[in-house]
Image 1 (spheres, rainbow, N blue to C red):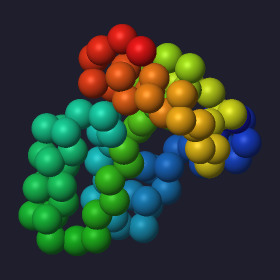
Image 2: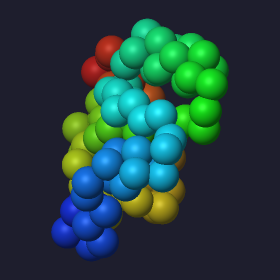
Image 3: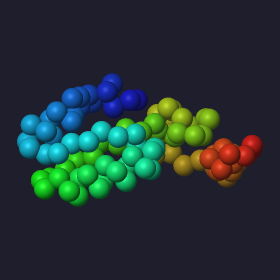
Image 4: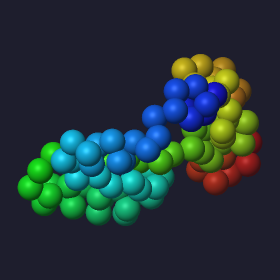
Length: 91
């Protein structure tokens, strides 16, 4: 299930900040935002933590937001469908 339901760690950024770390929360699917956050962390002059918010299985219709696929490998047909969806084609 979702982390918040299994083992709620919120407010995670506040916890890191309490120990003096530079914290940044970013959309973990946004490459430009990730690059900017990494650049800011390098310039922080102190330890930094990047909290990348992601969606499990993003972009694959039968996997997105499904805890069932956490640590489970797709079969050949499912893998082909997933790749087709991620590449923008139809399965």
